[in-house]
Structures are given as structure tokens and as C-alpha cells.
Length: 358
Image 1 (tube, rainbow, N blue to C red):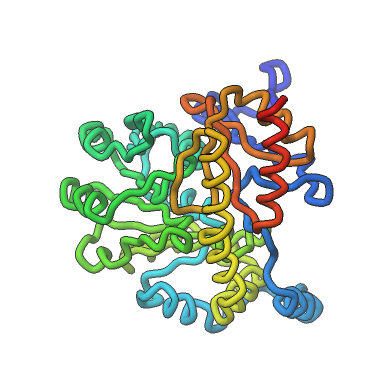
Image 2 (cartoon, one colour; image 1 turned 45 degrees about the vertical axis):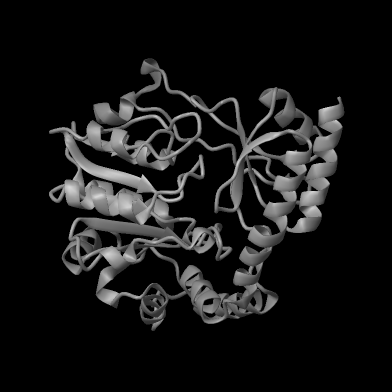
């Protein structure tokens, strides 16, 4: 998508005019036609009883502005912090948006190991700011010392994605605490989108470090990417400022209702997580090992794969109705694939075996 100067009728800010699009390839992803392994989505929806309750809710409440009832109390119990430490957002993307808008001024820099989640760069760009930092090495180990060394007088925010998306790299609690200690005047934002898979969190550090901010999402393990719900975890004096930016009705009541049901009845989504990590993942890794396919293991619901010919592999899979995500530079020699239930993984293996023989 582009707009020429002759078409431009309204003058926009230079930061907006000069930035590119974050345009993930979401179109033509028909789940009835393709097996979707390209966007780290959950393989199954919430249980039927949750879907049925949502239908009833829509009949009775769609005409009213949202109220959230005791959801923050339930979320507080789940996270292990008081409600004053929490802010609901319209997906974790809005969490990124309100945090960066709260902190950044034109010309500021955000430090983040590269590559990372593109939404950080997109939001920073709207504010006339940049996201820069060290590259992950070929083994994708977190470049901790490089990130520390990159911090300078322009740095207004440090971002750590744990585990990293798209590399899957873990970041230890010791490394996160070292960043918090080393830069006490710079906020450190930790993206824990895959917490329910990795089990790693830095929430325990919140009481000791006022510069810690955490964001999470209900889009991954909890199975609600279409409903758009996330949350911020931080000190109450920072949450208050974020509330000024987030609109009072930005979070829809259907998302909150579904999330409450998921938290109150976790057996379904926790069973899926267990299946993916204990059955699907080991089966896929065994298959790749036996067929000498290079891959990068991690504790998420996705995996980076490095075929001899990435373009051909992605094309072959798509021709066989399987979508995976080709990566951009500097890791364009890989594709990312989501884990699915074991029967789907067997289908992937069968198709990929035909690719290897072609």
C-alpha cells in the first residue's frame, strides 16, 4: 500500500509520513482450506461451553457499554499481584502502544535485541523514535552484554521479549534483574506473551524494582487471539498514567467474559499447552533429528526451522495447504511454524517428507 505526493490531501506528521507499514500477511488465511501454522495461534478454540456462554452474553449485553465486574480480581489472583498493579488492554499490542506513548519523546531510542516483535518498532515510529539494539548471534542466545553496551543517553526504554519472538530465545531472571539494576532510571519492559508455555516470569521482581513493566496476552495459550485482550503489570503509580491514555471502553466485554471463563476453568487450555509441549514438540523434534533438518528448540508454541531452501519449502507447504511464516532478514534463511495437536503434526511431517524427497 502506498500514497503518492499528488494523492496526499492532508498533511500528516513527518514521523508518520516517513514510516513503513506493519502489514502481516493475514489475508486469505482460510482455516477451512489451510492448516494454519504461521501466526503462533492456538490449535483449538475455547471449549464449547465458553462459546455458548458468549452467545448468551451477546444477546443480552451487546447493546450496553462494557462493565468488567470482578475480572480484575480474578486476574489479580492468577498473576499474584494486587489489582492496582494491573491494566487491561485491547491485546498486548495496545499495551505496547500506551506504554510507548507514555514514555517516549521525538528522537528517543528503544533498545531491543534484533530481531524482535515488529509492533515495538511500529509504535515507536509513530512517535518519531527508533528501536535499535544488538543482533542475536547465529545460535540465537540472548545478547545480554551487547544489549547493555548499546544503552546510551538517547535510551528511554529497554525491551526484553521472554521468550523472544521470533527466535524463541529465553532470557534468564538473572539477566533481567541485571538490566533493572544496571539502569535504574530506565524502564525495562518485559514481554511475557508466551509465559504460559515457558513458565518463566519476572513478576517476583516487581516489588524490588520500580522500573519494571510486564505485558502479557490472552492470544496464545489462552486461545483468544480474535478477541484482543492483554494486560500490563507494573507499579500502581505507573499504571495510573497508562489509564490516562487507554480509553475507558477500549476493552470489549466479550473478551473479558471469555478470559474470565478461561481463568476460572483452565483445564482445557492447560491441557492443550501440555499436549503441545509434551507430545507435539518432542515428536516434531524427533522427526527433524531423524531427517537432519536444522531447527531451533525453545519453550514456546512455535519453532524456527532452517531448511536448505526456505523459499522452496514454504512454497511446497503452501501448495499442500499448510501455511508457515517465512522470516525477514536477518533470519530470512528460516521459517517459523506453530505447534499444533499431534494429528496435525503428523500431517505436516508427511508433507515435509515429500518436500525433502522432491
